[in-house]
Image: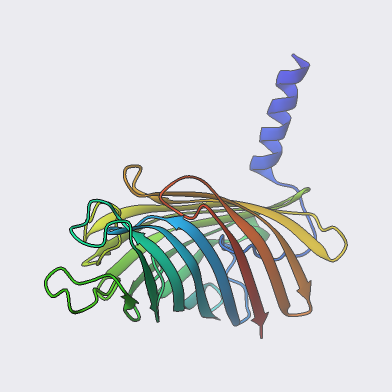
Length: 283
């Protein structure tokens, strides 16, 4: 009976929240529902290995990205995200007509599953009134530039076959955050829809939906550091499954945030293991 009452108490604390002074640092991937009142610029870098796409597997390398966001009218924010560089290598799948098992280079001005995206955010509920924040977002984007490869083009073997040289993505979802006695709880749930994509989906689909879900806890600080953990999923519960856990440390000095973590894949076609770094400044 005492154990059952203990579980009920824990669940009640998670749902109701308890007051903490101030807003803790945002984790690397999961975003606040709280729109805030500052412009922000982010610069990030992440490594990856073991990823699978349409014609290649064991994709290993890194991507760099930038982001600028600006609030307006107290409850809105515009966010521009730009993955501007990817440098990687991969292995051609055994089911391909040429170069089976051969290592190839992948490099260019763009990301893999992340596109150049403009996001509109609208906060609906404010913690000062209810104890939690709730917002929604809608976005759209396209590939910023092709990823060049050393994989031969099937139609013309004298040429190389680029990856991610076409494609659009549209999305939307909801964000939630609440302060608790142990730190900050954040949740993002959304849906992406890729269309006219090239060499991206592991089964070769050019148009496909993907659930985009993130859950994070930023714990109370250890001195100047906030430990945090995120659980993320991007996929269709079929052939596209990217499920990761990201333990991390967050450091804030005045208006500058420095963040470092390790992305640990727990199955599927996504990143098996990689580092994640991010710096941001608010002004």
